[in-house]
Amino acid sequence: MTMLNAAQIRQPLSGTPGAQLDLLEVFAEIGSTNSYLLDSPAPLPGRFRVALAEHQTAGRGRMDRKWQSPPSSGLCLSMSYTFHEVPKYLPSVTLAIGVGVAEALGQMGIRGIGLKWPNDLVVRDGKLGGILTEIRSSQGKAVTVVIGVGINVDLGRTGATEVIRPRIGYASDIASCIKEVPSRSVLSAALIEKMFNTLAQFEAGGFGPYFEAWERFDWLRGQRVSVEQPDGQASGVCQGIDVDGALILRTETGTERIVSGSVSLHGQQGDIL
Ligand code: BTN
Image: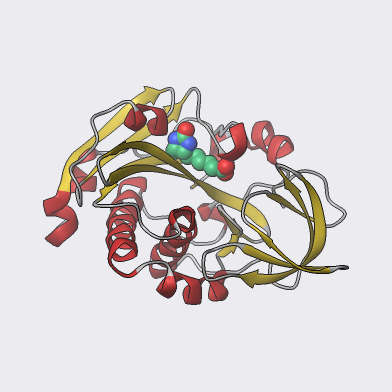
């Protein structure tokens, strides 16, 4: 697979994303691109930084899980962005980015992408990728978020599919949904532009537009699930999301709003699918 190329990734970024980008770095190997940006200087409000890696040795997922992907098999991309002030419903930014990433991939011909609340990208009933949002720091009213996106681009040719499949249930990749897989640099540029625009729009207009768009991608709607929450377990049928991004679950005793948790399809083990 062709290596990531910083100049090729940066070159198509024009307009506001090009002007607001402070720094874009590509690492051959790093612990975690999210951790790296969490330790780096925060961009000024409205500006952003990007870190990408061919390989992460300590990639992280949501809820203290690991994100492991064979070298150069996918995208390990993190963006730090500073909001002028803490946006309303900040946790829903993960859902907004999910919508943005799904739309960007759809525009590149990768069809059939679903979003599994709150942070998984699904295709062909397998996990295509995930999103990890972390709050970096607060200075005055401003707040910096680091948003990491991991996407499987081509697992088959790495020969390492078996290493990760048993760990996460079933993994899918872009190569299994499209004949001509765009280069990872092209994919990165498209995702960076979309992620920046999503953050800027989220800052200006809130979660509303993404709340409506979520329905188009909602992979859980109508599914019977179990949810592991910090304070216990809930089971029921998914009814979509609320205006603040909470998952709505119809249980035997009524309707519950889930703000944080790990969702597994009823009768299956593990939280992924
Ligand atoms: C998840 O599925 O729980 C989220 C996975 C997020 C993985 C990405 S890869 C780039 C960035 N760096 C990390 O350490 N994690 C995120």
